[in-house]
Amino acid sequence: MTGEGRRCERVAYPVRHCRHQRQLRGEGLQVQPRHPRLHGKSSAQVPEYTAAMGLDAFEYQCGHGVRLGVDKAWKMAADAAERGIQFSVHAPYYISMSSLEEEKRLGSVRYLLQSAEVCRALGGRRIIFHSGSCGKQSREAALEKALDTMRRAVEALDEAGYGDMTLCPETMGKIGQLGTLDEVLALCGVDKRITPCIDFGHLNARTLGGIQSRADYAAILDRMGEVLGDERARRFHVHFSRIEFSAGGEKRHWTFAETQFGPEPQPLMELLAERRLEPVIICESAGTQAEDAQAMQRMYEAARG
Image 1 (tube, helix red, strand yellow):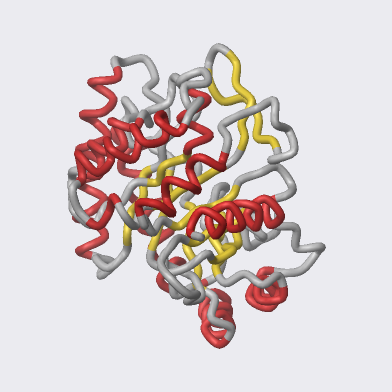
Image 2 (tube, helix red, strand yellow):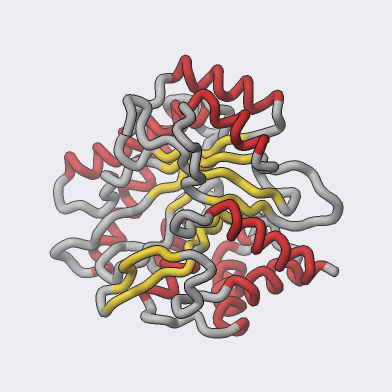
């Protein structure tokens, strides 16, 4: 940790055409590793480091609070723009959209506003966030509170001049958390600017290994298209990694080499290529983010032919 928050955060490996990526031939997606190893470099060196890795996007992690100063973010954005690199931001983990406490729900809106400020300064657009736990209430009651908080957040961002920011609620890996596929899609129904972050590792973990085949991936993509029915189902946000799970869902992230844990990336890459979908994909492998992101790129390009 530094005064800037957890740096190194997430860097993108482009496959093409989605937000934050270099334009390559054909259509496709953007693949990013999460938390790449910066080898002691400061946040200010992120654009240089990212470009040296052959990547062109970086998702800045504000999980433990928005601590990156706006002035420094502007300088990073200028350097990134010269190198063809764009930023996105992961909002603080403290967000609880469905809390039983009104102040915590209002605090969640403030965290999103803070994230929007630094995302704007970094030249980014997408703000990814966890909705929080259901707590001691039914999933239905939790979702209703979260929907209300989401409406307040959209209104607050518009009033503050951040109407061009894209909020991305994420599917979650623990069963007790708000964040099934349908819950996330319901949150996206609040406003057409809200785009889902589909974490396939999380979905696999919370369903105790429910993603076993190409058909399972297809069902998720089909459901997203059915509910959203617009460009958000083509240009959504993705998190991907192999994840160990227990009876309660997500337990630990692993690398692609740990093949005893799922889900498998190959069927997803093939489907994305065949359907010509254009998501931003963030690789969240444990320590081999860049390498595994490159592996997904190779899978995708092979499927494209």
